Image (cartoon, rainbow, N blue to C red; front, side):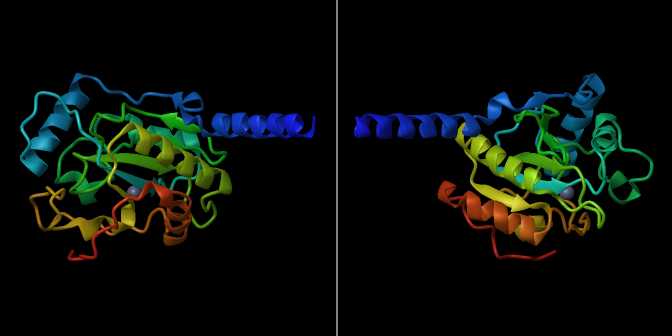
Length: 226
Ligand SMILES: [Zn+2]
C-alpha cells in the first residue's frame, strides 16, 4: 500500500517535470516580416560579410547568443526587429548592410517566449557569427528594467530545448562575441566592423550557464582580440 502511494507520487512528479520541460508548447509564433526583400538582403549580407554565396538564407545553428533589447517593452522591441531595413538611426552598423537586425526569439518580461523567425533562417544579431547563431533577445535590460527571474527561467528552458533540437556547441552572451575573432566560425571580413556590447550582462550569463551545465557546451574561446 505504502509503496503504491510512493510510486504514484514519483510518477506524478515525473509528469510535472515533463510538462515544465516541454517548451515547444509554450512558444508563441509571432513572425516578423520576412518577404522577398528581407530574403534578398539576408543573402547579400551572407555574401558581403562572410563570402558565402547561397540560394537561401538557411543556417545550421552551432551556437546560441543571448541578448537584451535595451527597450523596456514588448511592442517596441518587436517593432525594432519587424522592419526589413535598418532604421536611419543605426549609423553604427549601416555601412555593413541595409538588412535590419532581428533575432529568432524574443522573451517578454513575464517569461513569454515569442518565435520571430525559423531557427534555421539567418538573423542579423551578432557580428561575425550570424551564419551559425540562433539569437534570443530579452525585453528590457535598461537600468530601470533589469532582466527578470521569469526571463532567466525562460532562457534556461529555451537553451535546453534548442540544444536538444540542433547541434549546438556554444552558448554565449552577446558581449562575448569578440572572443570568437580568429575562431573557425568567425567569418566577418571587415576588421574595423566591431561594436561594444554588454548584453545580457555577466550575471545573467553566469546563471544560465549554471543551470545548463549538463549540456556540456564548449567553453567560449579565450581570445579577446578586437
Ligand atoms: Zn545584443
